[in-house]
Length: 146
View 1 (cartoon, rainbow, N blue to C red):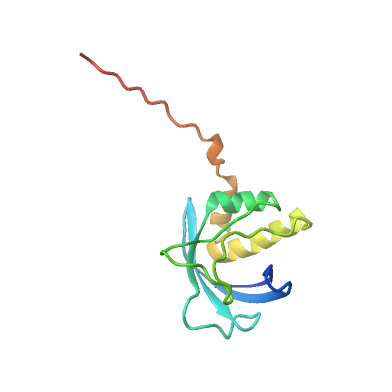
View 2: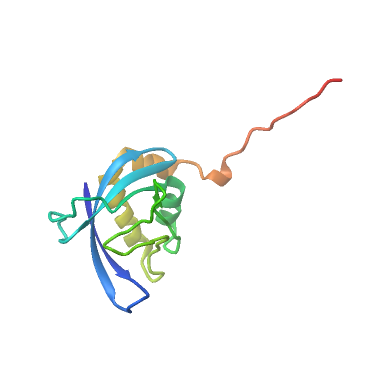
């Protein structure tokens, strides 16, 4: 499990909220990773809610884009037809780092979170995979006879 602390600008109260989230990996695949997220009361994730707040996936391509671009949005998609709630904040759809963040710092964050969640081999394989846009689709030929 990985413990993450986020400082979230809720855009509602103009107050930043600190959220502590325990991230438990379910699966780490070539296309997506799935995790279960728990809300915790402390930055060490020792005192966490018994019930999970979310069972969610993150597309590997979205992670790779966010790793290479500070401004890239990334979103955890719910596995079931539910809203994702983190720290009691519901309907979290997309996240991005502040555009003043340094790329090396955000890459260090992703490296720490992903290698501790899915392992270094998975992390390296996702980063070295070709972008979806560069994968050529094989040509299909359809012929008909009369």
